[in-house]
Length: 307
Image (cartoon, rainbow, N blue to C red; front, side):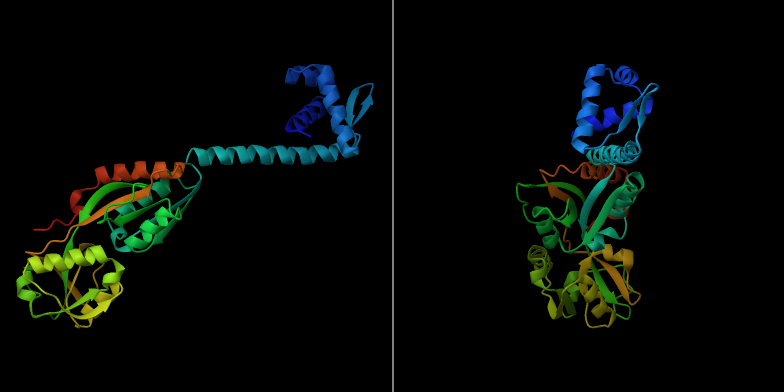
């Protein structure tokens, strides 16, 4: 049995005539008659009664017609669904992100615009560290990810540079120097510091330590934590100071103040990465929206220049 048998059957049932079905389908009457005969033989069911007034569905034929209509509707729906996926109007899109970079500015703007324009796409967001996100993109677990990319990327990964964030000094509210707008790294030599563990992101950690050394500051580390959120909790408790991503300004803890560092700069280049061979149409639409958002976004909303 082929799909054409079902279409021939429904047309004959609609017109009650081989001749009229032949005219409608632009197929010879003997060919249609033979196809209906073959269908009945395969089903071992008589679908039509041949009367003087034409062809009349048997009870079995009436029931079969109901089921065939349902099948054809499902096939048409499947085709529409497939076309929507091919056009990027439906389907699934998995995007990873460094959580701190998504609180404000470019990333939430692009994600929100994509959601409004492509409501039928199942959008999954996965927060993680940059190394974890890069591995997930390489393994095909994510369609793309927002990362801080310091190291050279594999040739299999395509990258779009979006903007650049920086670092700020996090101090407790009661810190003796928190009345200043900025502070020099050289003045922090004797201060206790909270840092994150080097294993979390070795390249960024090494860049930070090198920048501090160039500014004349050797960090006196009193505790290492696994995330900047954990670091800020210790700053809140007056355990020490911390050099953190400037995006923390968008979600400042109530007991923490952020100060600019006048002589210390660590660039955090934010990029969107994807497998070069990823053919997900939804990803193509997302990248178009992302590039437009990056062009339209006022620089001050998502870029913290360093002096």
